[in-house]
Image 1 (cartoon, rainbow, N blue to C red):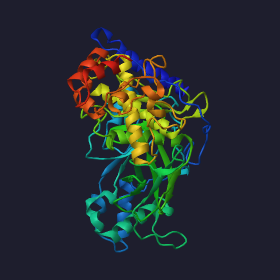
Image 2: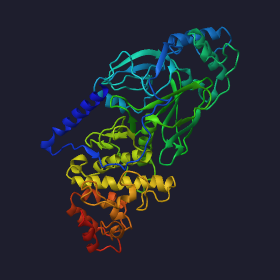
Image 3: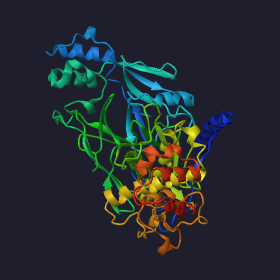
Image 4: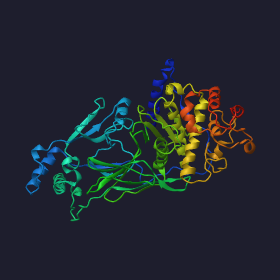
Length: 536
């Protein structure tokens, strides 16, 4: 049912844009559908990090204004005097957001100052996982979201929301910043926890073990790469450490390490979120982002994502992160100041092609399987994600954005994405990860095009849509002798130069020829260009 809803919603989005054809706008589903090289791969797998998050009993809220006033009164009788109980007022609201349509959902997604959770924050977590749907709402509705919101933050009134409680959060009160009045704060919180029977959160447990030492939540997140056959750091994911309504954030570095700048004294709920300010990876359109719930503890949370759906979307995230923020050799980024976040949908199925891009809306879908139940390798997921992202970047940087993009010949749309995909994946797996000839003409490992032998075996009869023209323009290898295919004496261009100076003027083979001759490097002749393009 959920998959049918997603398909229906995508159809509506596409149709809504397609109906503007008379204005010159059309929607084309750009799919990367060329066949992968066959090889043995892992079949569907499950891990302990996956499955439905199960909530337990609803806890009595210790952070309500009423409870905090009562706690302040009671500790004053024990000699702790700082706050006037009668002057304690709400600092935050505990909110539930209930978007009812795609516009409200988009508005909520754009609320960058909110730390949202798809599950209530005042419940025990009995089982951690990577999915949750509130039993009170239907499975095919937009996921409800929960957050602690400062009373000074203005919310978009068009998003349906409900105020669940008025909170006073002393940990976020400037009165207690930089360790000021630490003993009073400890006493106030402990008293509030005792009043609400949340004894597990007090600094001294029933066993008399003190938890007064502060700590910086942190750890290491690694992901298994099937091409490298080893664990590597998962860079850029949003790591959260939450205590009730207060969340600390950190971002993993290249090695997967993370450490929060601030501290807690009591155990925190860890979680991992596959999102950045310019993109998010998620399982369905009706979710804001994909995530993994972790344990409640004071110790570091270290995660090895070895297999399963989390590994699949982790490699989508890796590619999206590199394309957005990492080294891509001068290529343009896939976003601009005015562009909405890109939504990468990790499709836990075989779509019939490895990926597609709806262009007019920032929705990119990446398939986990091919041939029914054969899982794409890590570098193939990475590569496909780069391919689809290249389409978005291409469209967003055209003179009239998608309107101009749809006037580019289809084979040139795809061939540009092929070239970028090959180059960025080569940067990742050859330059960064150390596979000596990855993406070169001599690379013989079974991998999907264009990374197998640098796509130098391409011929027009093999696939007229997904060509190697941009690869041949920038490489220094003539495949004619070895493969008896294209006679390629053109070299010296770079994808970054083409992206910056030529791409927005290329619509047909004729305009490609014109741009190449107008910008030809030293040593390249018009005859060389004509000979190369004669194969396309």
